[in-house]
Length: 233
Image 1 (tube, rainbow, N blue to C red):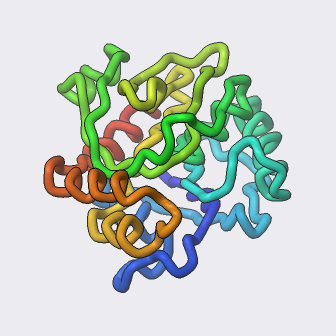
Image 2 (tube, rainbow, N blue to C red):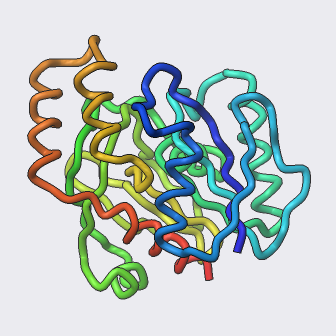
């Protein structure tokens, strides 16, 4: 299987030493989940888009600081690309921004959340029985980092997981579209740096709570990457 990484940001000035690029984080976690995978990288934020769909591949849309409902030129182009790829039979996955823009493009809705910044590691409850069976559990832990939330699913979508803070944290459309609001690719070192050094505008109370969560939970990035791939089969 090949994963096409549709990279929607490079987080300049935020990547810690030892992390050469955002796509590298995806390659690391998914290669650990399934060593036989191969990757193709598309810098969507620079206007690079796949021109054709390979039916056995997965097209994964990454996180981003952009808004999925905004008017940034590459975001405006990405939304109709999603509807075209879905109609063409593509297997797609979305992480954070990718989760949000897949919902937005396929008939759901994403908005700026009144809950504020969701940051740190926390647990999500699994509502979808197929996913719970694959995971062998009715919950999972991931790193979260977002201000926007999906508030309405696409018509054919099933909610996979959620929490009191964010009711829709994952959804799927059959076994062709699978999303996660959380970040399986993020490491604790990366998110710790982000919280402490790259978010001066955010509340000290929120950052303190987020830092405490990094020692209170163990993120299950590899497990959730493995689940995402299994749901596509």
